[in-house]
Image (cartoon, rainbow, N blue to C red; front, side):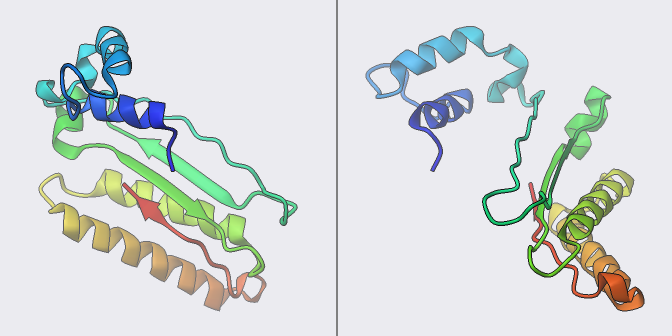
Length: 156
């Protein structure tokens, strides 16, 4: 569960808190003063900053996570195409989880960047997942050392 302060800030950024008297008022006032106008919903576009932190955890000796964020540099293309965030967590214990997660992220980024702007989001997501799935399946069946590689995949 996200920290309440973060959640309140998120809601405030998207105009979802009451102006006065709400539980988030002190945070909302601070954020309204400090958040750049390009991040406010009523401007109909956002400039997003992204960071990530991933740890190997207590069980596995290596980290099998892969993450990526991409948005077009050009503002007009960013408005049309949007941005993409990707998280893939290689399935530990199946071998080569780090290979699977990195490959899935790379495929998703490539497919998203190359897709037609007019492609409906639902179709794009379906195509992205199918392409990543088939590429990992093919790699696992064609290379015995990579048999059974697997990853989770989340795209936003």
